[in-house]
Image (cartoon, rainbow, N blue to C red; front, side):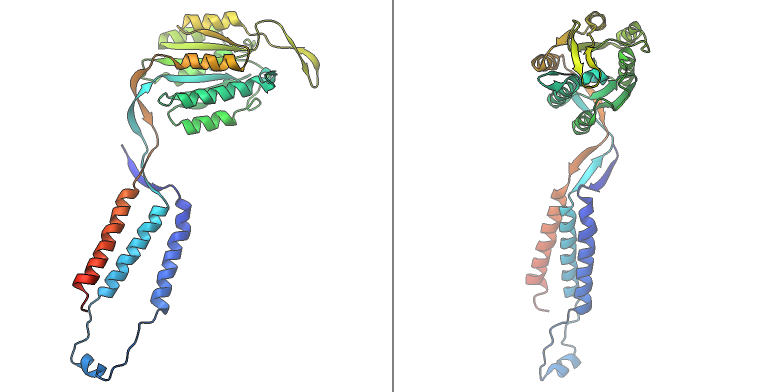
Length: 327
């Protein structure tokens, strides 16, 4: 493990540290000591009865250290473990999401298919706290949007920022996306590896053969759960520019074959309720214990700084009252 210190509110230090330095400068430069006149002052000074002890400088320095530590506490110091291996219980999985143009059809309670798929994917990610999850999207091409990770905040941000049109939406390279997801899982040490594939159509001509993706999944021990979104029957919708057009049909035969061949299961989602129920069913998958890498773990360490403040303040009071009170 490799640790280093960071400050969560680092930008605050850019204001606090210069402010402290300026305050100290003004105190040293412009503050005048209290001056008293006594009739016997010259005699006392001549006979060496005036204390030359530096206790005031020491106490002032201690106060400066306290203020500096408090400024660091405001910036929230954290210890960072930038590559930690932890033992978790879960399933390594990749969500493979269709981002082709037809996913913009609004037939799910006035929401697009893609919006519903995103919303339920986000809900699913939140529930799977200990599962490393990644994201692959596909249209006419396939891209890996996020490798498997336990950093759910990053993953949810990526899912939320993903929309139809972020890649070429004029196609459906379903099997190519599966191969990309399988490649993401090749280094996984988990006993359970899952791919959740969601699509509303069937592969286009530029896609690779589906049997290739199936064979790779079987060799790697990956279960593929397939979700068809839309309808298995031919339906039509009104396009704002092109008039009445046919909706893509879900190739249920292909999706069922992919799922059964890899030990997974095929589902059809015809509305938002179906989609939620499907994710809930997948959520009840077998869990296994395995080690995984977290690339950034943060530990707040304000307690040691706080103890340092208490100790310095106690020493200052103790020295002032019991040691240097007579100077």
